[in-house]
Structures are given as C-alpha cells and as structure tokens.
Image 1 (tube, helix red, strand yellow):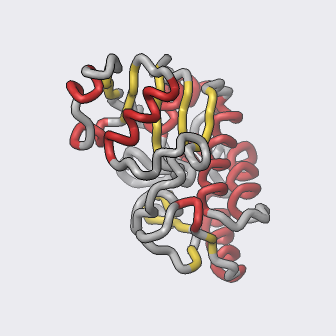
Image 2 (cartoon, rainbow, N blue to C red; image 1 turned 120 degrees about the vertical axis):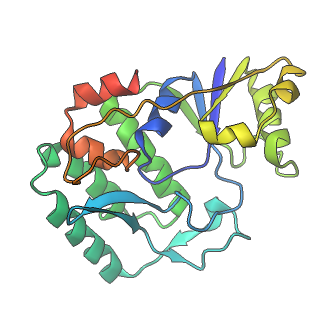
Length: 229
C-alpha cells in the first residue's frame, strides 16, 4: 500500500492533490502542533491583479497547541470582508459559478469552529469535485503515538497501516532518511508536483496558488488531467 501523510491545509495548491492522487491512503496529521504562518489557515489567491494571502482569523492560536485544538475567530466582519474581496476579484473568472460555491460553503456558510475541520473538509470538497477516490483518515485518536515526533512518528504510522511505500512532497527531503524507512521494509519516495501554466488574472503566471484559483480558470476535466500528470 502507498501512503501519504500531511497536515490539513486550507484549499492547498495542486501539488497537494497530486500527492493524494498518487497514494492508496492519505492521512491528515491533525494532532501535531500548529505552525504560525503556515498553510493550515491561509493560502494565496489573486486580488486586483496581484498575488496575496487570504486567511481565516484564528482565536488564541499558538504553536503550543495542536491543530485540532484551535478555533477560528467569530468576527463576522472579517469573514464578510474576505467574501467580498474574493467575489470582486473572481466574479469574471470563466468557471466562477462552478468553483465559488465550494469555497463559499466551506468558508462563509459553515458552522464549524475548528480550523482543522474546515481545512480537512476544504480538501475533501475539492477531491469530490475532481473525483479523487483515495481513502482519507485523520490521525487524531487513531494511532496513539503522540509521544513520538518527526520521522519516528511517521514511520510508526506507516508500520501500523502496513504501508509498503511512503510518499511525500519535495519538502520532505530534508525531514526523512531513506535508510531509516528502508530498514523497516518501507520505501521512501517523493513526487515532484507538475504545475502546468494556465491563464488567470495575474500579469505574470504565479505557480502554486490555492487550488481555488485553478478551479476558477480551468475546466474540471483539464484539472483532472493535471492531477494525473
């Protein structure tokens, strides 16, 4: 079995979905410490022709808390401002009517209060849209290995899942040792995301924006081809 493990990101870039599509089972690592200025509660879109971050405001966020413990802010004004900004920036996108409802239901109409749940469901919503069938679970309450850290914990999950291969994005090159996994009978592999250029509202193409930008500008069938590339 091929396995991948990642923290839940908010509408992540296409490489995240190429990773999910490349494995048999994908695990949201939601019971590790939150990372400030990471991708858990924010991503990048194009506003007024420029690439900028958008984010969900959090309540008492701290790197001393687990991702699953952190609530989003109840400030409705901030959400309304974000909603207006995205609508104004993308209302003329060719596939706005197909993509925006996914974003709207998860960010602006949801009654969830945990960022981990919102981020996970943002990924699952896109998977459904793109017909990605990979099995997905979350780590919290499942593996009982929070006493482990780093690659020790990842290896423990791989062993408990009976994985033959653990696949990661290129950033994991600095985190994981092939021999460490090989000694336990597990192959460590990395995929190189294939980010094809497409036309959007940016003057110069900017790769690795939130998948939402891609969904706004490219037909679903074409995105499926990119996912499989």
